[in-house]
Image (tube, rainbow, N blue to C red; front, side, top):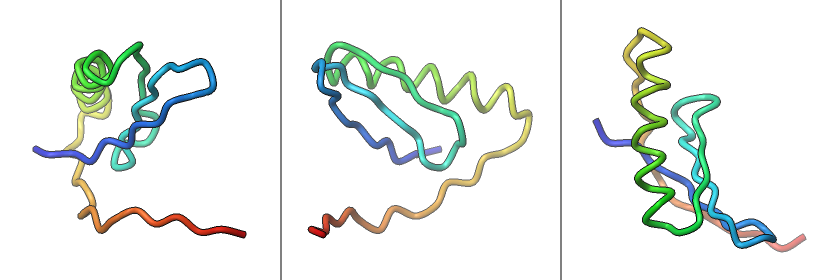
Length: 67
């Protein structure tokens, strides 16, 4: 299965990865490489905990808006 991973960097420089298709599935790391390794593990744990098939949404894109 493929999942979309949203990666952000906080004010301390820590990378935070979230999986929008799986509620509560997120992790953090000191680099993009580290956070991607950790999010792969987090996805496996979240799916195992759910005991159900998680059906990912189709990624459309990201937009920014100024208000």
